[in-house]
Image 1 (cartoon, rainbow, N blue to C red):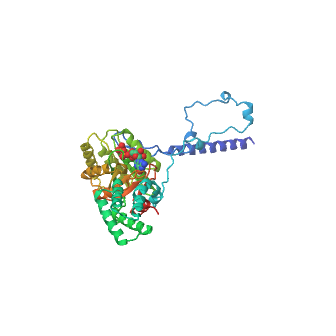
Image 2: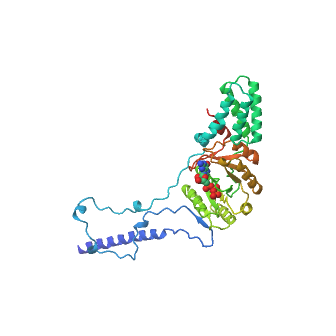
Image 3: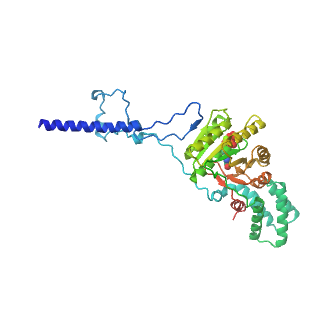
Length: 408
Ligand SMILES: Nc1nc2c(ncn2[C@@H]2O[C@H](COP(=O)(O)OP(=O)(O)OP(=O)(O)O)[C@@H](O)[C@H]2O)c(=O)[nH]1
Ligand SMILES: [Mg+2]
């Protein structure tokens, strides 16, 4: 009998040892996050997820309390529900939530109400004027003024007015429907429907596509870079962000926050560091992790205009050591109107702008700037910003834009 009891005890001890061995060996396997060498650029990934059981492990050194030292709960508490055992899963800090951005298709249609001011003054204003029974000289002047106030620009305004006059004359009597069709056609004509407005995010090579975002300060570069990252992630692409704005300390944080929300890594460097080397490292990182696209945010402010321009030129040249830049997006704030055109000209002298992003089109009556800026640069508007929300960036579609302007 004693022998049987002894055998059972030995067996239980053996099982216990095996289990604790398993636990220990599985803990040993857990990998530590790699620590970056101090000379390397700071590459910041979204915070690693906590592992189940992290908190459950009691450090060996911790002195354990004996039964005698543990105070018993008061009787009434002990009589209630069983004391909660701390659940490591519940106690762990919540994993950062990776957001799933809205699809991009049809965004402009969904956001059309945001064009309210342009809608009222440009689209509907023109329709009302054209519907007047007598289209006298004063009315044509008012039409011209409406277009100029909406920042369409002098030459395009004159062209449009001329064409409208001619077509209205040929038409004779006008029904509201005929006028709407006519105005729609002529506005589309002015904006152009043939240009390729896709943002080039496929390099066609083994390496990631590289997109650089430029523009003066406050136009919305960082916001646009962040929103664009979301658009790409929504389309199933992997993205690396390069925070090449080292002018402002908060700039890299701002970009990184955008990246973390969709799980995109941000390559950043010290404040006042060399933007070109950060851009270079961002592309290097993109290549290393086989990302689809690298988006580079740049500074919009330097002490001098020449300083800014030299810096941008350098960022471009250095990035091109890895391969060609696929897209250089110029971000313009639509509310600044004609000022934006002056900026556009300056940037176009230094880098080869391949697409325009017009931000803050929500709540401005200056929707006509779309026409003016394309004329100025000979480059299409590819994206429009229609709000501060994370998904308020829409691919620019001329038809949807004009329809939103003149209403149904
Ligand atoms: N209403 C509206 N606000 C926008 C839009 N795009 C950007 N903004 C706002 O404009 C402000 C400036 O945006 P940023 O992205 O920081 O501009 P930036 O060009 O990076 O500025 P710097 O880094 O200083 O050069 C922010 O408050 C944005 O939320 C838009 O389409 N509509
Ligand atoms: Mg910025």
